Length: 299
Length: 303
Image (cartoon, rainbow over all chains, first blue to last red; front, side, top):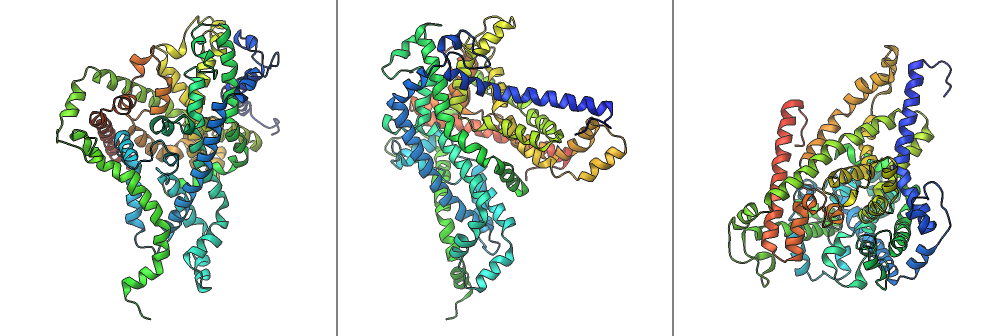
């Protein structure tokens, strides 16, 4: 933008705007940036406040400890499985249902929609849900990560609205003329035309599974089934940093040797656990706004 | 073969029914059966009967909760945390959206949006873990900065005074950007001609924000505000639970975390579901009240 021809007021506004944006940018990004540089730096320098802008005294101690820790790997394996399988089930339940609810000629769509929307405002609460899972005998199995709440009503509405607006009625009529059934139309026409939608909803579900720690906390007792987030909690919050238990007591010794190394591991484990999601992020970022806008058209 | 009306519709629609059946089954089992289980709040829990429950107790468990010595503390903590979240957290994404909407350069706008959405994808465990390491008074970088500013030796994560500010501000840091999307979407529907004619009238950029952008946001703001009032007592369980420690417990114990401790940890199922139901009912009262007020004042309402 050329500065010439701008009034003084306009210039002042632009400067204020730019400053404000820079401040917001730094507030959001600096904590994340700091975690990254701290995870590569010498723990003594980090803990004495010497590492602020650039990594100092390169050290991979934290990462070495993490890669030797079998808990992290078991958690990673479990979470990967729950996330991929869970998202697949989510999509298999959500997409066909959203397609059906977008069909105007389907008479039952209003009562079914009503049945679904009520659950957005009212639910049984923690205890009845917990008892149900026990009655179904899916606590302490991997199924508890996959089956319960496999249809998110909010995402279902987004998908339904998308099908209603993005698939022209003439397309369906033409397909029916050629003897196309609903199954065929859904698989061969609706799905291929909905790549943006599938990416957005898929990502929402994916991130939900990856970050879910509540399910593991409430329903899982077996350590071999625990997802990564529960392992993270042990390391980050309960201070069980070292697998042999050395960090457990050391946390209390303030500024002590164990605490310093424990922090180093914590910085590293934050990076290791968030990396897959953050790597997906730039590729799918452009779809976010679209997804929310589709959903907000009708709510 | 000729089919009668109902049968013909069924023949036409049976594939649709097959496609939606799994979703209906899932919602009925995992959403509706627990609703039936709410009646446990009025009954004794019986291990052999599960969700059906044992002897009828009426409102005994609600009375037990209201009479319990923790009642006032729990209510106060839950209200304060929610109220602070709404008062400070609600306007933040609106302001952010108005700021982002002013950026004219497309690449800068994209960069800002990518950045502010990012924290939303971090898990709560990682967020609380980050807060713990960054705010540690001995070794954290924020601890050092505060010492540098002469604010002294404050333990931000384990003090009754700082719990709510830390909770609310970290919430804004994580979700403000994401929540601004819906306002940005509303702003993108503003007719560009409005800006042009405002310009011709000699309106400054600030005036345009006040008289063009703000009115465009009002309907969205009202709807989202009603919805957030309906959640006045549903403070997020996960983050508070993870931020709790023995030092901040007097201000950080809320209804949701108490239900977890009473129900899942100590297995007092009936008592815990009564507390949960009490919480839900209060939320409903607030949602309903706000919706009525808004209907009267601005003709905007949820239903």
